Amino acid sequence: MVLTEATGLLCVLIGGYALARPLSIRSYPRADEWKADPEQATQEQRASAAMTAFFAILGGLTLIVLGVLGFGP
View (cartoon, rainbow, N blue to C red):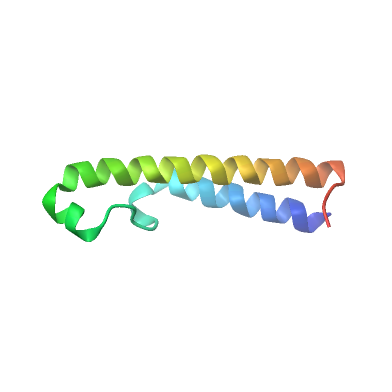
């Protein structure tokens, strides 16, 4: 049971990191987009990081709830 909650907590932490530092996770815009229009690329990167964080946190919370309810390995 603990493995499920620990995995969920790890997902929540990853999502929190992506929200806190959106420009330090894997770059979504290509390198030529960063050179052509850095401001637009920054906005795309922030949006991508927010979506990644949302789904990581949502998945993590789901795993924590499933683990607490006893539906884990």
